[in-house]
Length: 319
Length: 111
Image (tube, rainbow over all chains, first blue to last red; front, top):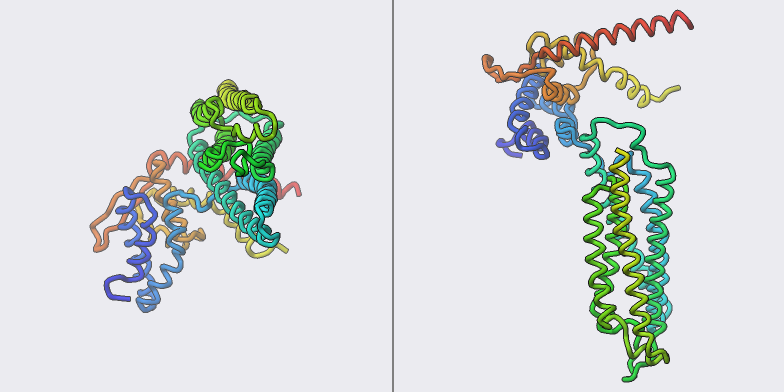
């Protein structure tokens, strides 16, 4: 400790650190005067200045708390309004995705020729990693919801019962969420399994799966998976903050960003491996599957985009 | 038997609004934070410094108090005084307080 910074200096600095700039100067001046007054008072009562200062600062309490009280800021990441939903979403995601991911990774590495214990260890590690990312992103999404809705409730002046969501809405939402997650997991598992375990010997003796190896190795599918997970997150976000036109537009753009390249890949014949379908004795399979993929992508994405608009317009009507 | 923490919470909840009223009444005459804290304590209102100081700013922000820096003394201090709006609120709150008091008394008669 040096003579340049007294405990009061440090206390005031620590309090001001997290306050908005425009309030700082005034609060600093006032706080210093208040502390000095309190110290003087104690000294007149007979205390020595060091212990008087310490007592006064102790009474004022943790600077962060005082600062929060000055700025009306909340000291939590996810508040009571969303905490239970947060737990629920987190439980759903962790309890479905992590075991599934564990099984996939274990099967794939085992099928790839690794010994069982290596496959098991690798899968365990990968599952833990997945659990961490799920926990992180779920928390992030809910922390954003908390902040966005804090802004929203401050703006909302009137509330009436007609703005209440349908009771079934919530259960429906969780069913949809679980359904979406399971659907995604099943597709990923099916894809990974057919590509690795279901691979057959191609013309050059190399193993080929149904997805063209260029696509498989390029990481495009990871981007698709990222899109799917991000889309689920944005649905959760929109569910809690209320579907607005902005959500619907964002959702449509999002869906288009996924659908257009996906359809292009399938339609231009780059998605599937001709060698694979020839090897399994179904040469026209490439075209048939490509058409099926295109139709499914169009159906899913269109219904998702339209669903967003329907929800947004419903929201407007009930207001 | 109620534990100490729960007891403290309940008492704090009950006191919370009364501090606002006490401030509005006391600040009919301009005063600064520390002196106000002292007066409140001496008049029997229990309040912590770290509750009172931010509260004064919130009330000022709401237009119930106005403030002015007083540099007459050796130490410049921020003086608060109840605004017209604040005085109106104080009247309302005081009426509510009396109404509550009457209500409590009538509860006592019935029991």
